[in-house]
Image 1 (tube, rainbow over the protein chains, first blue to last red):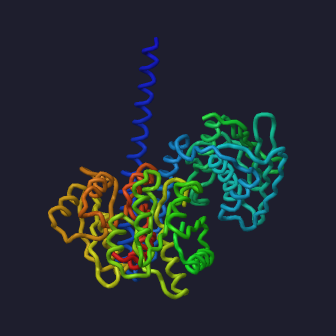
Image 2 (image 1 turned 60 degrees about the vertical axis):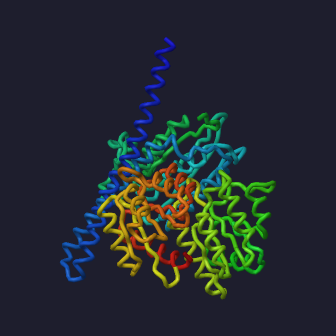
Length: 240
Length: 135
Length: 136
């Protein structure tokens, strides 16, 4: 009995190693030809000079845009595979400050009003700060990126119970159609065509993975008057 | 971290960093021994700096010494070291280059060129990757 | 670097990446003599047998057949003759382990190859400025 447990563990170790090597190879070996495609395109464009049909230039930029997407998807895959391997430091964070930092990092926040409410006895906690930051950032980024109105409101609420922090991020954007609500956590899934909003469609997948790892759950609730609400609980104590 | 015994240089470096908006934490050490105590001794700073600028003047021995010690210490050997100097001393130069420094750089004389100087360095720091936590 | 143009050795196995560096050098008006080795073994041979004039700068890829960049660097650092060469890693590998290995072997910089040529051009321009600042 004991022997078979040992065998299993060894096998698991071997599989893990194989998987990590696989990811490493994928990341490097596929990126090289990908970069070559983009580079050569740029050279041809460059060598053609300025006297070129607009059609050709448009096609070149489409080509580069699509390879760019390919790279983003590649990076997203890598990120997902690394969720439990990188940025695993436990350190003290101040929750309101962490959320403010996330807001600072957003690059498209003009015309957005943020409303924060905190019901916390203690603002500081020791946790996987980088992971929490990643989840909050992805949700905020989504709230703004997919917003369809000129003036946008984003509401952030944080409270706590005995065991968890409860964080909810809502917006007054278009919301998510009921029929696709169960698909949004799938990788590379986007509600609109990627030509409408150029995005990779990996933010929710990564966030979901992180929450599974720390023992929380991420859920989507339609807001009462359109818009989206994403809620998650983040355990106060995380065992790695 | 900047190791420099000249107050004016320290001030002008600080000035250049703030003008260029370089947001890194900057530690100063006035002497090699102070630098050592910040790196490895009683006043050890955490995290260990990723970049050290050492000013080596005419009497460059102690700077080279410090560099030696850094390279021989496993925790420190991966630090990126730039040597800044205002003297022509080939011996120091050869010694420093042999210790795998990232660059042996002549100190700018005027304060305007000081800004250019740090802006080039900063551009360079921005294109290179550091291990996990940036700078 | 002042007025004298130092030799540069590029250790890179991908043909397009070599062309890329050459093109970026030309665009940035970098006129230093550039020599190319396809992997670590070839590069060591070139250095040991003085097939190329001793370079002051090496641009090094990490993932290469036969001998990868880190192995090459380790062997090169053991030889006193090559101690003073500045090595710049230029790679697609964003692995922390590669960065740690490279910095432990005292590279002057670890640069990720960007996807677009425009970004690569600006990285090379920055490198050029930095090289001009340094004395070698």
